[in-house]
Image 1 (cartoon, rainbow, N blue to C red):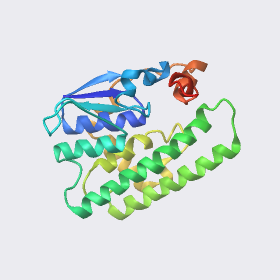
Image 2: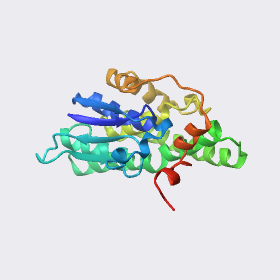
Image 3: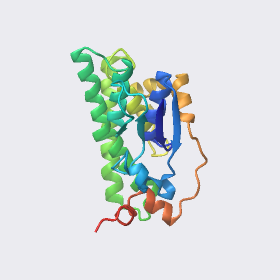
Image 4: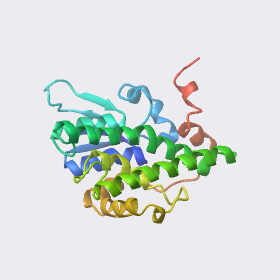
Amino acid sequence: MIDLHYAPTPNGWKISIMLEELGLPYRVVPVNIGAGEQFRPEFLAISPNNRIPAIVDQEPADGGEPFSIFETGAILIYLGEKTGRFLPSDLRGRSRVIQWVMWQMSGLGPMLGQHGHFFLYAPEKIPYAIQRYRDEAARLYGVLDRQLAKTGHYVAGDEYTIADIACFPWTMTHKAQGFTLDDYPNVKRWFAEVRARPQVQAGLAVGKMERKPMDEETRKNLFGQSAKEKLGKA
């Protein structure tokens, strides 16, 4: 059994999709990030960066005590290794997949996250910041589009892998962020194909909830202003 400490965000969706694709039994442990539950000591014990998602594998392959993992790239690799699925075992194939997972972790997710923050949520609209991150997000969409043109199939090659599972949830935000996939025809083709997978749809539905208006306390909890106070930093 896997315990999934989770909220329905692009990063959370990566792992709910992966677990649905694998068919592993899992239990959702909701984390209300708007209410600041990511700062609770019991959550910090498994996710010291106070970010969702995190998992606890109650039956790790070594037969030892329950094992916790945080950071979505690490979780995807762990689950791929645990099951032998969606992560190639050959040197070149494995390396290609991990390269694109790292690309998503270091580029696509953070840059779309920053653009989304300044474009959609920041209380003060800062044109320089919006344009800075919009340009970088557009560049990264272009990188993904060229890679998908090269492979003709999925992000890292002919097979669907954790690289696709890592990248897809962030592209779910394209409409809200003012992008059109018509500008990226290979991403558009891939996006439609991945989204049509029943397991992806099931993963996206986990913990689905109605979005509520954002008050000041929620804003502080979501965007880090509360971290210093709640984590007891000087």
